[in-house]
Length: 347
Image 1 (tube, rainbow, N blue to C red):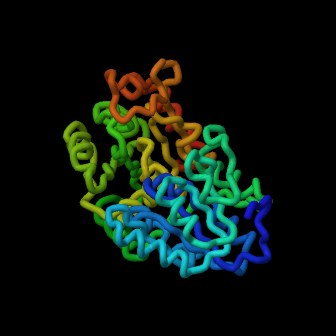
Image 2 (tube, rainbow, N blue to C red):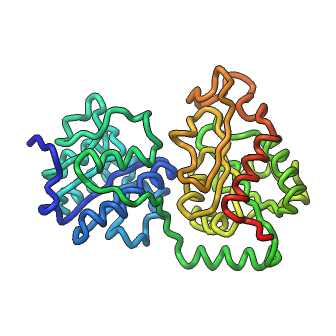
Image 3 (spheres, one colour):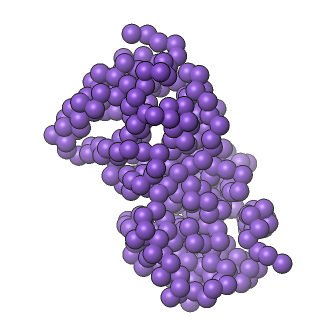
């Protein structure tokens, strides 16, 4: 059945699909308030992978969060049957890999929305825009809704913190910092080696922020980031505080209490935007206008004059000039902008 629009009056249950990266999933949450407004009485579920599920569970816009386990064929088969049994009237597959396309096609939903990727169009009867590199990742999701006549008045990214994680962060800050401390988070994590700014550059930035703002530097890290976090801490020593081991929700709660965050293009960077903590993101192989922090309160920096900038390579074949050659003066101008436009210092 070929469609041109979404028949809103027939939609009682909706499934949103977005797998893999935490940051990509956070960007996709921009649709949730809009779907709730367009379909006020519908149930909305979200299908994602476990690491990304924690920030979705507890969102009032969602009824249920389904988990995709790509390591287990049996679990994926069970999931496909569960999706079919749920009898969704409308499915948005914002991921569009072979697995999510198969689940969408097998769902039996009368309205199946996805991107026009080669070999996967069979799964959908409404196709989103082909121009995927035109808009920021978050805005791209809204363009899908707009193409089929849905209103997109909301521009909020969402991330849910549970009470346990918020209590953990409150206690940690109370035990570690004075009430008026200007706490700045630095998160050296990144899903690709080439996306990770070098510890030496992060340390230079930290020294400048300490000097200008009398800041307390909190090094934030998660599972798998131990080497990066410890390398940065070894350079700063007593000038920084090394956060304890945390879950993704606990680290997110710590981010929510920082004045601002300095980070690579990463999940924590996008989480920071969703939580409302201003962030400066450092970019090398990825495009900041597509994958940078979403919203006017944030800043990003890269070196557009490099011939290899936005290479999208997982490993840097050169000497990481995209990070090491960043101007500290320009970085501080970006940080000053963050502080000023978000009124982080009261005079």
